[in-house]
Length: 185
Image 1 (cartoon, helix red, strand yellow):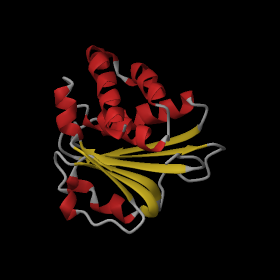
Image 2 (cartoon, rainbow, N blue to C red):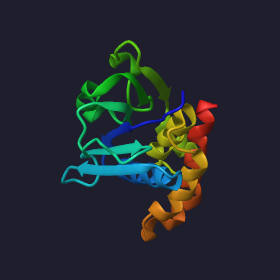
Image 3 (cartoon, rainbow, N blue to C red):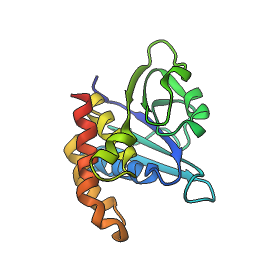
């Protein structure tokens, strides 16, 4: 599956799972790949445990979609707590990536035609030494499975996306992206 044209990606989870960082890395990787991008982030008042969502629209030409989209090509369900609304917006020809560490895939109904990708991304993040990098594992897996961006672009974008107070996690963050990509191989 190769992702071309305009693709909308919804990421959802709870605060502290790295959803906002993963969205920024995905957007910056698309820019490195020469694509057009819009990014819209939304999160609750709490930093840890509250709802956190991000929409990334990636296109070959100027982006037509508004930053809040009615339908999305991909949904990355990093946590089940706030997954219901993004699932209603998943297109029938879309991609659903579930973090099976905390989302029970048997409880998620998907329409016919949706490609499901199921991985224990939070567990894998822990295994590479960065327990908060499950979202990075997820975007690595999405990139490798769909070609939405190059995995090397994700790794390069990681350096610019990490805030200065988190630079000590750069190596394990890139390792999380690459571990996710290996899942799709």
